[in-house]
Length: 391
Image 1 (cartoon, rainbow, N blue to C red):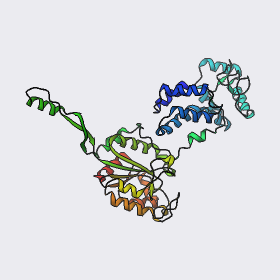
Image 2: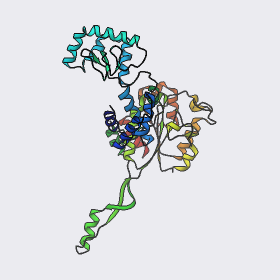
Image 3: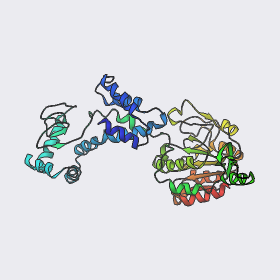
Image 4: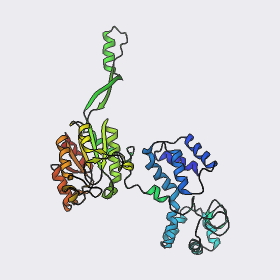
């Protein structure tokens, strides 16, 4: 079980090695935890994840691997149509297993018995020949044996407590290594490039080396230059949580592409609108915040400022002191946006909401006016327009 989990973690972008797996196995051998999925979740994350940037990737893999069967039980208890259940179960069964189900009395008899077990059973069961569990001879369960049953691959008890741990990710950090669907965004961002050579001269300059060697009567004369980098500086400010949750994927794609294209890239988060502080880490956003004034002092006016948000909120959150839904802001968000716009002359707002819906939201219209009309849809065409506005 853990071997497959190990490979899924690696496939999911968590850089685990065999050392971490051996540490986890040794901890389990020493019975560091009891028979609790909650405790196992925390133990395995401690052993397998060495960088908090990868916590969210671990949670996604852990949830997919250890939570899948709960959906089957939920479906049965919610009285999902039998035909749907039949397709979901039988598509993974061999012809031999289907024949064994018929030997038990057929699909209808099997499902009727399974429903009764679900209604009667109150907890996890190990062994035996009746209840749904592991290691026994019941027709329902996993890691046991019954010649006429259905294999249900449950790997843990159904207390559902740990689901709250790995599923609560509404303010999770964006994954900067997400590559799915980013190629076209990278191509679009390449239009916002200005190359320069900076740093240590450690790259071989072939043309200059050939010329210098020729001038030196054939004696090799190696010439080096600093690596060529994109010199454009970009500051990204992401709206996170709430109405932005449906747009997490496209924001991750943009973030990943930007990290790949720009050497000088900084990013921060805000919720709904910018006020006196922003933050770097959503897990510690209440404890570790960066004053917006410090942001203005730290990053020069040569940075390109890009807001990413749907701008969907109450107009009071933009125009009134105390309008924030999370805290009491002494000054209106519009004041802070104007200060930032005065410092960073090149400023745009990317909106993932469909453009034909913008006029239905007063807050979107207000925000668009505050950025001097430089609000663009978060599409490839919108990126093209935004890049032209940033030049």
